Image (cartoon, rainbow, N blue to C red; front, side, top):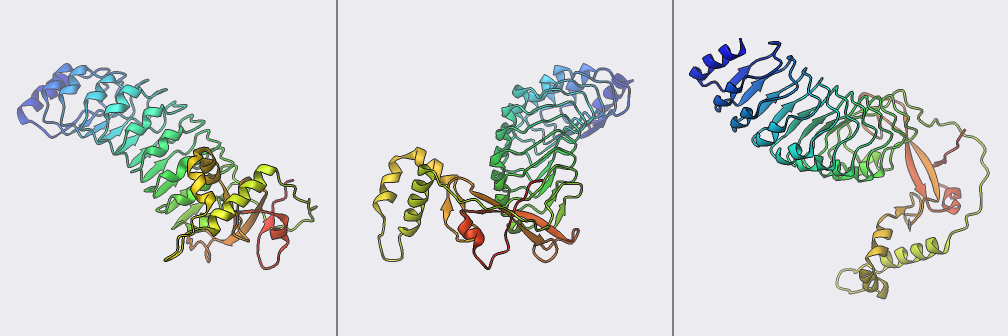
Amino acid sequence: MADTMLVRALKGKPKALNLCNKKLDKVPKIIGKLDCVLHLQLRGNKLNTLPMELSHLFQLQILNLGNNEFEELPEVLEYLTMLEKLHLFNNKLKTLAPKVLTNLRNLTFLNLNSNNLKTFPPEICRLSSLQHLSVDSNQLTELPVEICALLRLEEFHVANNQLTSLPLEFGFLVNLEKLYLQKNKIRELPESLGKCYKLRTVDIAANELRIFPTELSALPLKELHCEENPLLQHIPVHSVQEEEVLSLKEIGARYIMKELKDSKPTAGKDRWSYLRKAIRHYPQIKEMLAQSSKCAVCGESFLNTWLECVRFVDAREDLKLNNLSGLIPVRALLCSYRCFNSSGHDYYGVAFP
């Protein structure tokens, strides 16, 4: 039946071809003759492979392979270099072939929902045009750092997996607008999330999150979903304070960072200090200092997290959210108990049960 349909289609030179729900276990090789097709629908069949003749569809832009039985990416996909949208939801994919991903440079939309994926290969970063990525309902336990190289990504769905964290470099996704992480096991969001300056929707419901990153209030959020998380509560308890004893490395790092801050050049003056000139020759020290934090009270930089605190912000008044009310716990880092004991701030120490 499929052969007959394709023979008829040859006469009309169609731009779109629909072979959905035809109980196909293979695609006839004659399909290679339809090099005029831009949109091919093969959803809802019994396919687990595609013929190499499909590579002749060099103009193909949209391919729907959802609801089939693919266990791996068909090799022929690497030749469909004009492909923009690819649907592979509800298959049996366990891995993604790096060779195929490497050539899909024009792909903007990829739907891999409801498969058996446990990880992404590093070559995921080759999908340089990708704007929408959906991998809901898989078995992902981690995301590779290379996924943070998808600089055009605007929407990322990774709900109902087994993630416990996100890459520290997540903030490189500067064009991300929507992030869906519900039903994972995420305990902590990376501080770099605050660099995703276009992020408007975050769904972190049904995870294991206790506190949000420090720069949450800097994001232009319109929706934040965080129900069913063990978020910190605003319940004052008695605490025992310890006297801080800083390591020599920490003392030296704080001194250097303060000197660098104080020696910044001002208008009309060259105040480059000896340290600022010398540190250029020590890239490892520069890299180490780049990982420093800033005290929420005094504003001075420090190397290692000394005192983790929490500030409770109002979801409506502070974050301007319409879908959520009440207080949201946001992380704050302090450099010393001296700052913690100073007056005039609203930071609380974190008490663990």
